[in-house]
Amino acid sequence: MKKHPNALVTGGAGGIGSAVCRILHEKGYRVFVMDVATAEGQALAAGLTGENGKSAAVFVYADLADLQSLHQTATQLTEQYGPFEVLVNNAAIDTMGPLETTTIEEYLLTQRINAESAYILSRSVAPGMKAIGGGQIVSILSIILSGGWENRAPYAMSKGALLGMTRSLARELGPDSIRVNAVSPGAIPTAMERKFWKDDRSELDAAILAKQSLKFRAAPEDVANAVWFLISPESRFITGHELHVNGGWYMG
Image (cartoon, rainbow, N blue to C red; front, side, top):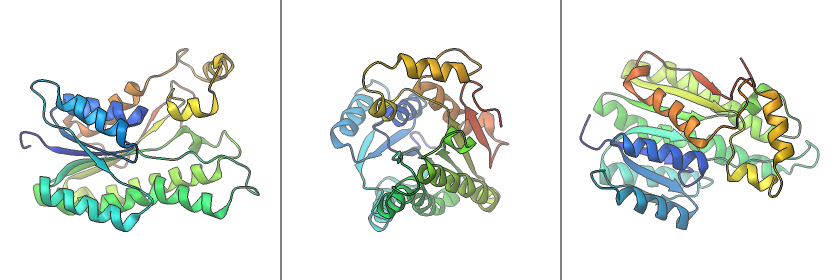
């Protein structure tokens, strides 16, 4: 592995994404923080770069809904910085609503940002991974796939597509020493959660803890640690796997 291997994290400025960026940076990766949140992404990249003895971090603006531009961006980054050893497909939008009232546009946008962009980026970085003798792709799924919620069909479908992609690419890319896995978080307190519970969250916390076997709320770092495990050499014989990180809420 070269001195500062490249790692690309989509949705890198968000709660889970920033935690993933931090742990990868701590492990010596040059982290590319890909997001549409320019101010937050630039601040994170600058903060990581400013840590003494660490590699630089780079903010990359990208609209994941623009698949053609996304492919061009990934290609340009590879040409400028070299191949990516790691891709973390983390970015997502959380679409909620009954089947009859969710618009076709909302449905299509959810699939494009949550799932199709991950396919495009995997397709874009795989040749470089093959050229350097391997790599790791990790996608972030969701406990929503367990089927315990209503009014979440577009979101659940997008995460199901990621699971299918994970298993299929693990089979296809394994001979090239590219491991493809997924982390499926439970209820993680992030900005996405706070979007729906802005004020008193005691009722939400109580409902979640009642479902979990472990009686404490998680942190984004709990997910980031699982991502790192699947990237690290300690998981060298694991591919095509969905790792649940939900405190024992869903045991699949």
